[in-house]
Image (tube, rainbow, N blue to C red):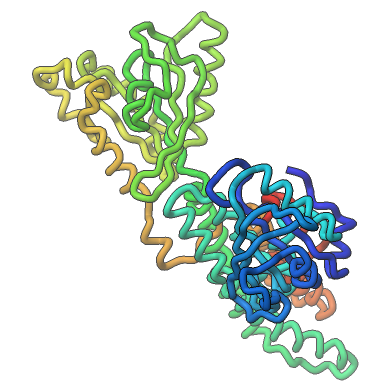
Length: 473
């Protein structure tokens, strides 16, 4: 996707009226073309002929819909519905309309060509949302949540984006910034009376505030680990020896023939990845190459990548052939993967596959399953639901209802810088540094908090953020 043109970004308030297709390109029942800017109604009244000949978009009330035809001179292009949004009660905060036409690609193109003939220009990627931000419809973090909402593929990622778009995260950041501004103003006042050696800001209360700020910011930073994986999908590595049924299990979970299944060991030489939503939570399953000694260079590379995926995974499903397993085998598995089993950030689950080949479990085997173990037949799709239920138990979805969770890398970076500034302020208070030096770190903390919500920003930042949006949004 093309990056937003900075020259256009600097002149967004020059009165340009813009248009773009807001529905996905291609043939459908209908398509929606969005128009926004100061000349929206004046221009659209020239080309739109409503069924009620007396109706004019310019004099219409906001949030009205009109039926009529669009004409290019005397030629009718299509019968359309036009939705009217008067400033400031529109998505962008400007006068705007949405033209609902038939979904023919030809009709879409002709309507956009007609609008361009009226001196309306094509919108840049994300320009409608950028205008909404500049016109105070929402702050920068809420604008970013719009993109996340569009890209959401599961209930949890949708809820995360919706909560942020409705201002939950912004409210918390603004509250932190407001408290710090109050103290900053008092400390700045001290500088004006520096010769009189007076102290307006209570240093003890400032220390208490810093502790509170640090606790809030650290909590937000810590939430990124769950927010990011909920947004992108929780990575689940399916590992095990060659030919134990890893690919068969992946196919059973996804309910499609995603991976090639063969009796020949080493069929999977590279990882295969796909996502599925389970009870509203997105999981990213990774089928890996079988773990074994191999002289095949390509297979060896695949095995190396398996260990890379194990390191990246939040959940590890170790599959073994229960019909061939012995107590010695299980002890070897536990010993080989002990570092992952003990890692509190990961969950390690044993999957005993091929129960269809068993009459009963080998003697003494049950006593060795100290780890969570699920017995399945991937081939017959038996007990696959038990894996899904176990995966859901791994996710603390209740946390979403009670805690503000961040999932945006830019927010994580800014919050980390806020934490560094808070540490500098604390050190300054501890070492009784001069007030003018203390204010530098306070201003830094305020700056980084302001960058999150867009109180402080640059054209480069805006271009980078909104340039990733689709055209028409």
